[in-house]
Image 1 (cartoon, one colour):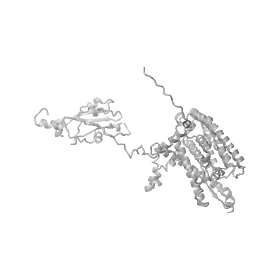
Image 2 (cartoon, helix red, strand yellow; image 1 turned 30 degrees about the vertical axis):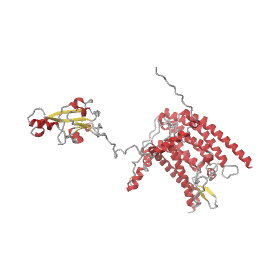
Image 3 (tube, one colour; image 1 turned 90 degrees about the horizontal axis):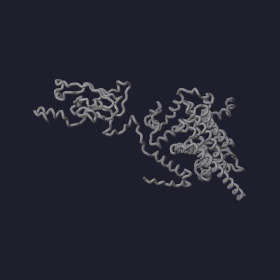
Image 4 (cartoon, chains in turn yellow, orange; image 1 turned 180 degrees about the vertical axis):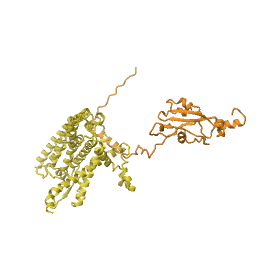
Amino acid sequence: MELLDASLPYLLPIVYAVAMISVFMGLCAYSVLAERKVSSWIQGRVGPNRTRMPLLGHIPILGNLLTGFGLFQPVADGLKFLFKEEIVPGHVNKGYYTLAPIIALAPALITMVVLPFGRYVDADGITQPLVLANVDLGMLIILAISSLGVYGIVLAGWASNSKYPFLGGIRASAQMISYELAMGLALLPVFMWAAAPGSDYGMSLFGVVQSQQSAWLILWQPLSALIFLVALFAETNRLPFDMAESETDLVGGFHTEYGCFKFGLFFVAEYAHVIMGSALFVLLFAGGWNFLPWLADPWGDGLIGSLLSVAWFMAKVFFMIFFFIWVRWTLPRFRYDQVMALGWKILLPLAVGNLVLNTIIIALYDTITR
Amino acid sequence: MAKTKVLERKPLSFAEKTFLPQIGAGLITTFGNMFKKNVTLQYPEERPVIPDNYRGVPTLVKDPNGREKCVSCQLCEFVCPPKAIRITPGEIDPLAEPDRAHVEKAPKEFDINMLRCIYCGLCEEVCPEEAIYLQDVFSLSGYSREEMINNKDKLYELGGTVPDKHSKWDKKKTAEQAGSAHH
């Protein structure tokens, strides 16, 4: 018993972390399904509706319903990746080739640590975030770690030692450099407003959400939101910016030489980044778990309130994931030079201008209200 | 010489240059598509509607009395561009089938090699007896080459009967019985 008490402070975070990873990976699997289903609906198709689990799929009406919605499909997909023959082409640089999918997935899972997903009111009556690690530098950690994800793609492109992945890797790295800048600059005004001198929160995401209790940032920082969203699409390598993959001209881009579980890891990593990006956008611009702009949360402070705040946050994240998918099946891909032009000639100046404008507004506001 | 008229392309407005209105319109279109009826069929369970004039697998048909119509004239064999049809002509035994004795000939063997058939429909076109029809079967498969050769039994099984009241052989018979050489 004493041993348990002594080890609890070490054990509990591990339990929480495992729980969050399970939920997160589950979400990844089901966003793959969502992608396939939404794309098929948009294209007038039906989508995956044949995979049936032995017992669950044979419940009279429910089983048919679940099968029709393809809810067993992710299991089949995962098993397929798991049991395929692990082929490593002879011409690749084996060490880096194996390392690349791990590097692609790991950052998304690491950034999860500082991602708040709900709130509760502690014994002292102070609102606290539901998060694995409530650190003041949350946003900085996310920016620092999530940009590492691109190294997985670049590494895959280089280690594959083949033309198409190489081109994909080059495009990915160029794209990352171009959009990372605009993304960071678009975020600065947000924190200039949310983390004004004297506020308690600093760069933590919780602070940004708390500052959006009345007006969501997307409403009074629409330009920042737009730049951030576009940069997010580029960072997650989603259409219309899927330069790294470029199925139409680069076969599979960076993962051309990958198969079975290594490809599966890349696949999951893409969706992990999409989910992280969606969550981030919701936290930064769409009010996090706050109910609606200028409306106080209709739920209380108790346990149910906390659960509902998580549910509301998840609902917003699901909408953003849907939005990512929706955009993918609407827009064609930009040409490589257009991507570069958009990043350097439009988004970057816009972001800088936005930053300067907000600085001037804050300076004026401070002089007037002093 | 034809005059070419060069159309000046209008410069893009500011809203168009940002792409945003177009992207918005595109998103609305795709969102609307999500609620439209599916254009796909759940294939093995749902089958497409086959029009009457469809050129599917060629089959042999029987007349309403259940007698075979083919008289093994071999026109289809001659006309078949990929030489998929092979007929071994035979005679009708007058003792076994007295009501068809005047038809004189019927195929002993009738093979259509479905690995060669190009579904052109020339056999149906050329047949003076209207005995061969390309019907609505469009998917067939087999594990061996032999299996893909439709023999006479298979062809009649696929073909069925044609509800055709007109039968020139019946008319010829009644004419013969009435003693007139020409009917």
